[in-house]
Image (cartoon, rainbow, N blue to C red; front, side, top):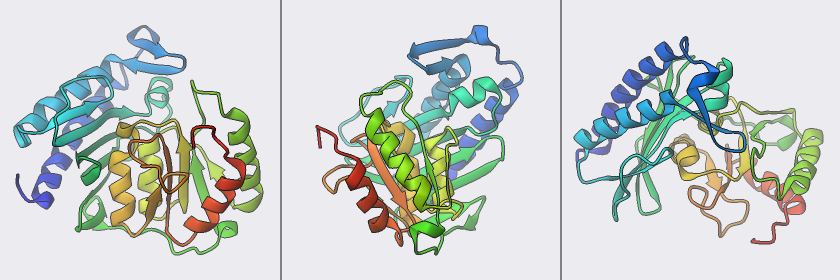
Length: 267
């Protein structure tokens, strides 16, 4: 395997190429070209073709790695795996809302080695590799320095097909509405995490996510000086479907609020 910086830079180039394809296709998308995988979970031909392009390109970069991809392209390996969301924010894309991303990470077991998130409409490419720091369009980025929840802008997502903990989540949302400067819902977890990494948001929290939604964003936040965890310490933020990512300074304060409102039976 090439050194991580070189590999990350090659993934960036591939991501920019595929983002160009997505940008071109955005003018052609129609309701007829969109399918429902499940309740409120959309997929288009653009998702599928973008994922195939990623798999083909990443195979050339690292033939020994397997794939964990949203649309099921490729096979998972025992060691290294690429974790791919070819179009995070498909609903935004379909409706013409300008926030959607490509997201690619390389993981070894539960360890994220590199990540690249490209916000297509803004042409902002966020990338990080283990021990190398985090960057946006080639410039170093860092999480914000705000030290209190009351001064913070947060991001979250809302459940779209798992409503079993809707009441608890609304309780949490209600409390954070009163204790922060505001809460945003962009519709792309990859963008939310990238925005924590570059200091636009102080934190992001959500449950019900998959590894391809967050893997790249997790290393972005960590390499930018932030902290990432599950809602509880035992939870893995990449593979256990719940995540809290912050600028580190407000992490414990935010977790205290979450613990009061979030009493999942499987915790």
